[in-house]
Amino acid sequence: MSQIDDRNGGAGERRPLINYSARDLGGLAIAVGLFLFAALIAWDGSTYPERRSYAQFGPEIFPYLIAAGLAFFGVATVVMALRNSFPEREKMNIPAVAWVTGAVVAETVLLYAGAGFIIGSGALFGLAARGMGRKPLWLTILVGLGVSALLYVLFKHGLSLSLPAGPIERVIDGALR
Image: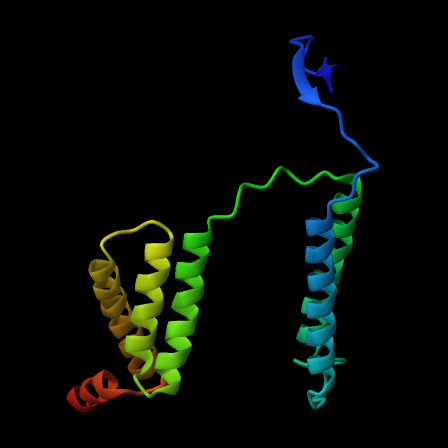
């Protein structure tokens, strides 16, 4: 069923009628996830020690601000889901989701195995890029390794951050000392 939309000067565009009795269950599920994530962040923030000096509040307020923002977006998502006003979703691209999920799993496994930041992040970059349509896989992983090596040098030696070290990182650290 459709109606004629005369808001644009009578051009008579056809658009579907909104069925306010229908509920968007996917949108409601997203809202529940937002509320749960907000609660988790607020709970975690409640475990931070208070560090107040001259200010009325310290850095421990930021988790509460993030939680409040997530809760606000949860409420907005509930309203949109109850009005069924989300745009129509595209069909899920299962192979792309599998590539990106595999990228996250590969990085986690490589980091726990001691491969280091560069190899783990290079694999994450390459596999995620493949999931988003870039080919060939060997080239995306090679680019990921290059970008990760540059980031490692900048973060470790430029900002003095601690990153997981593997064999490549030990060679770079030895060369830059």
